Length: 488
Image (cartoon, rainbow, N blue to C red; front, side, top):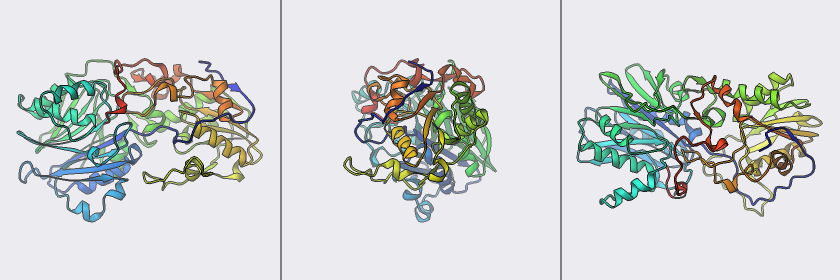
């Protein structure tokens, strides 16, 4: 694959049928245990609201009272955004001082109420509330094994496979955390788990640490969340990250930990820093905002352009564009107005309609780009349809040149760890050179981030997964594409 800047000319040759391009977030998890006995549903709500960028299809909250009847769990969940599913009346009905919440985007499988998390397990040892972010690569085998021993599944998500294994292991262990550890020895892939038992809040992260998980504290409450921005939203103090492979227990005795499964080199998802995480979050001690600024600076060093203004495609492209502008000493500008109210219920126009979802979500400020040579910075190109439309929007608004810079390497391989990077045949970079992609999207030049410089985004850390760019999977990918049937 040619990683140099390629100049090209001519009109866009993109002929793909209409469908939504770009990547979607995975899921977000949040859990809290108020040791003073206060109700936690509203705190979970605000935590999930801060994590809404990680999933906009569905959400749910489950709570229990540690001093109330053992095994009584109250839950509410539904399809839609957090503020669409919950109101003050519904939250007021969820009485309990320990609970978990979840926002979801399905990378595959059915998108319906049956698959909305958290899952609530009622079994012989009591109850468990479970929320999961990630994807298992061995879910089909584990599911079939359980089905042949009589298990009946209510969902199509691999989170239920995890829940079954924890429940089965709990029958032969003295504690929930030991059951979680035994289950972790069987499941493979990406999983950050938040689990509430009647008297404990438990967090677990897979040994590779694909997905983030942090610990927070507010007064006499302990919190687990996917990102630090959720801690900020509820006024909690960041305590630390959950280590890859670690199981943490939060209860009246404080924080305890089991690190016996921390046995392999971490492979944290590099795309958390490029796109998924909110820019005000810290993932494993690294500022996401600084990572994106650095990506832009690297792009300016490797792929300079003669231009009058640098603009970012909202939202994840903005910080990278600022980094490019700083390094290249070219003015930074805001060229796009984003409609922030386009959510799950957005109705996509038909192929025959002139409107497209890109135009509904973004509009160009003509005064900013008219008559100018523009550097447009975005986080990725997946299929190329959206990039082509945005380039055309800029040129229609009067930009005389559009030089596209991408703050990640080309997508060449699918992801099996909780990100909806599609199969190879749907990735524009798989069958096209950089020069060909440039021509397809109608840009004047195109430059990608060099994969060898990815460690600079995370302060030299080499414990990351870049399989979607390199094909170097830290876990052997599944023999069958599980994303068509199973989901987190």
